[in-house]
Image (cartoon, rainbow, N blue to C red; front, side, top):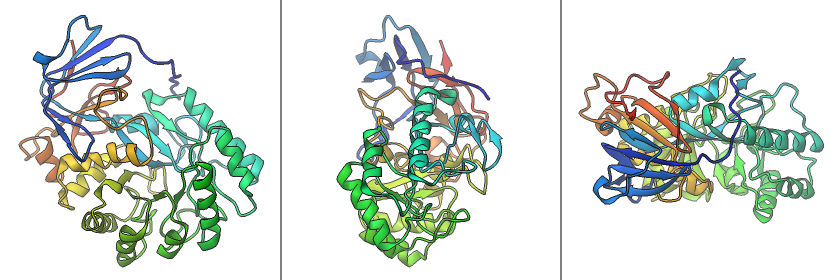
Length: 396
C-alpha cells in the first residue's frame, strides 16, 4: 500500500494559464470569465484574465493548453476503513484511483466495513477517533478523507455524542446502519446531534448490508437529519412517490449516489428542481459497496444527471463540488479566492461527438482527466481511470 503522509501546507506561487473553461462549483455562477488562476501557499489567491493578474515570480507554472478546469470533486458518501484498503472488496488503492477520477475530498458515512466492527460505546468512539486521526495524517495520492463517522446504537446516551463532539468528531455515520434506525429513536439521536453541533446523516431505502435496516420516508421525516443519505437507495430505493415527498418536505440535503437506483436519482433530481431545491442536491458514490469500487463514480453521476436528467453540465458539476461544500461546511469545492487549490483539469474524451467538454457530458460521455492538483501540488497526470482527454495540461 502506497503511503502519502500529510506534510503541511505547500509553500510557493503557482500560476495556471490558458484555461479553456473555468467551472466555479457555484450554482449561482457556474462558469467564470477567466483563463488564469494564481495560487499562493496552496490556496487560491487570484482569478481572472492573464492580462489583469500578476503571474510573475512563479515557482511553478501549469499551461492548461485549453483544458477545462473544475474544483476538485467531493464524494459526499463513502465508506473508508483503514488506509487505502477496503475489506468489503479486499481491494488496495481505491482512494488513489478515486483521485484519478477527479475526487480530491471524500466524506465518510461510517467505517462500517471493518471486520469485527465494535458496537459498544467505548469501541465506537475509539474507532471513530482512530479513523479520523489516521486520515488526518495519511492522504492517499493527496486525497482529503474526512473520516470518523460513528454509528449510533440504541444503548448510547446523549453523553456519548457529547464526548464525540469534544473529541473533534464532526458528523455521525448513517442512522440506520446500527440499531438506531426508525422513527422516535432516529429522531432522538438527530435532535441530540442538532443540539450538540454534530452533523446527522440518515440511510434511506432498503438494507445495504446484513444487520442494517429499511428506512422509509416517514422515518426520515420524523428524524429530519441534516443529510438524507442516498435518497435514491443504497442500493434499494424507496418508491418514487416517496422520493418526491422527501424532496418537498425533508429539511436536509438530498444526496444521490452512484451505488443507488439510477432511475430514482433522476426522479429525485426532477423533484428537487420542481421544489426549487437544486442547491440541496449532493452527489456521492456509497463506495466501497457490494457492487464494488467506482473510481469514476462521481463523474458518472454528473454525466447521468446531465445527459438523462436534462441538467446543464456546468450545473451538474456543482452538485459534486460547491453544493457539497456549502451544505456540509467543507473547506473545498469552489473556485474562489481563499479556497484550497484543488483542481481537476478535464476535457471531452478523445473522439467524443460533443464539440466540447460540456456538450460531451450532456451527450453522456464521461470526461477525460488530464491532471489533478491538490493543495497546489500535481497529484496525477493523465488519469488512469478515465478515457484520454482531448487536451491535457503541462507543467512548464
